[in-house]
Length: 426
Image 1 (cartoon, one colour):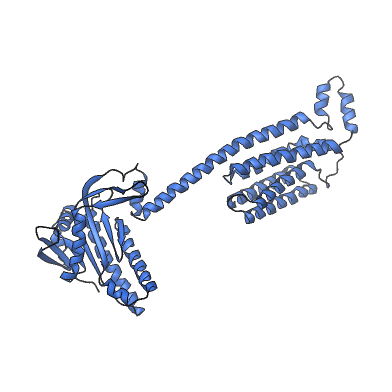
Image 2 (spheres, rainbow, N blue to C red):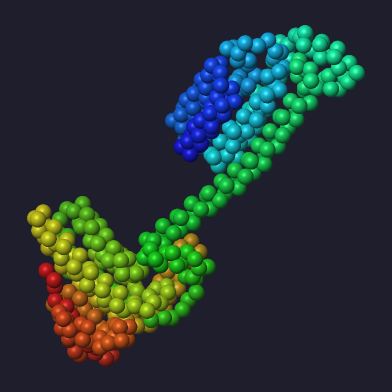
């Protein structure tokens, strides 16, 4: 409606300039006043606009069309002329109805366009009938008939008092035909508008799970998540250490606020490092890197995300300390290995899932941070993958601030593994 109002103002400006250019007389200001009324009525329409049917808006639409008819059919009272009323139809004023018909299409509503056609045609018929009823014989008609007595058809056409019903019917039929075609166009646009809204809603839903660049890639593919496949994935688990104790000292509202703020910080870290938010897990979350499409830097992104989480919590704790709130400690576990990817669920609800031993190990490595007294724990598998990605010794890349823990037992594994741990940044 705002676009339609702006278009109306532009159209009125163009018409006023045109009229003043073609008729540089004071009596032309009469039509400038009409232009002001059209602009004011457009403002009322903008103010009263709502979604769906609106009686006030429909009445204001009728006012538009009535104003057009009056401006076209009623002679200018400030113009000194005595021509017949029928002469008003000789100035092709009916074409101005098409401007308002075009404005109606901006509502993307076929019903509005059809209403323009019906109401506009009816008003034009009323105008024709009124002129026919009040018209009377005019001396100029007799003069034309007498002068062109040898050419009766030409005399009929040139007679200023001839209403030309054939032309009036043609105007109404053509106007209705154009309106019908434009209503189909508006209906088409309306459907495309809702389809576009659905696509944007789907993109928004994707953005809740995947990083923005991944959303763009997924949106350009056909059903990329429905194919079950196995591929290497970097998996990250993070949660708050001692959350139960922390929650027991807070009100339910404070607990929820803490979780929301924490999860918001962690979610941002995941998306900033091209990760996928797999799920929230109470006071933590699971994220994957390399899903649904494997990348060249998945392990590096996963490891960088873990470090970013630790740094984010450090800054958050500084703010909490200023507010007299208790410090938050986290544990982050990261692992790299093969996973199965695909949709799981029933007909009513599907969920994109990443499952396998790699996920279980990453979860248990995160739990191992309590035992080791570290904030971040990374498996040798992840370290080796980082080494392959950067074409360097992965263990060296973790030497600064990381401690090597050999022969660590993980529940569910028959063999012990090596972990690399980073002490807390607090």
